[in-house]
Amino acid sequence: MPHAAHHSAVPAAALRTPAPNTAPQRGATATQRTGTQRGAGAQRGLGPRRRAGHLQAVPANPAAHAPAVVLPVPGERPPDLAPTPARIQRLALAAFEVLEGTRALGQLAGAVTPEVARTLKWRRTARTERRTLYGDQRVIVATPGPAHLSEPRPGVIEATVVLHARGRTSAVALRFELLGTHWRATHLTVL
Image (cartoon, rainbow, N blue to C red; front, side, top):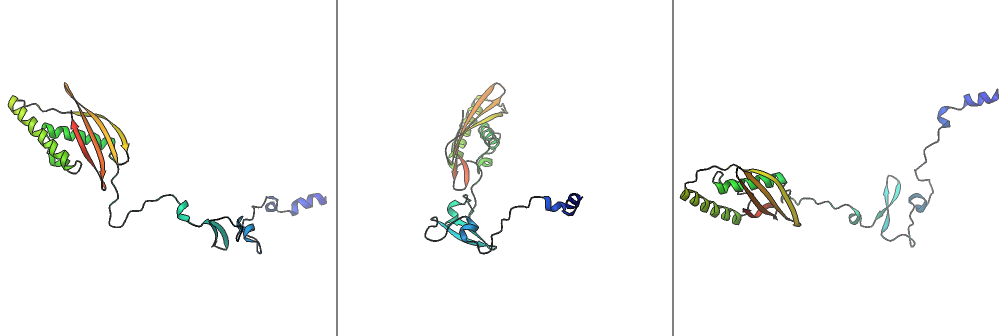
C-alpha cells in the first residue's frame, strides 16, 4: 500500500523531464557562460558583448560577416529591374510597328537610346518612300513569338524575338544596357 501512496503523492508535472537550463550560473567564468575564452588565449577577432546579462562571442567586425545589403543612397534612384521577356516582346513589336508607320516613334523614347531612335526614323522614312513608290497600302499586323535572352556580361542583355505576320516573318535583335539607373535598348535591328 505505501507503494500506491507514493504514486499518488507525486504530481504529474514532476514526472516530466525539465528543459535544460540555458541561463548562466552565478559565479561562472566567461568560458563557462559563452564557450569562448577571454584574455591572452582568446580566439583572435572575438570579443565579449553584454546583452541582457549574457556574454556572447561576436566578430570584431560584424559587417564582414553580415549578408551584403545594398541600401539606396538618399536622393539617388535605384537601378531599374532588368527587362522581362514580355517587355522585350512589346518593344520588338513596337519597333516593327514604327517601321511600318502604324506607331509613333516618340512612344519608344524612354526605351531606346537616341542613336537607336535616329536609326529607326531613317529606316521608317526609307520604307515609307518605297511603299509610296510602289503604291503598297497594306497594313501588316505582327504577333511576337517568345523572346530569347542571354546575358553576355553583367549590365548587358541581348535578345531576339521572331515576329509572325500573314505570309511574312521578321526577326528583331535587341541589345539592352544598364545606362546609369535605366535599361535602354542600345542596338535594335528589325530583319
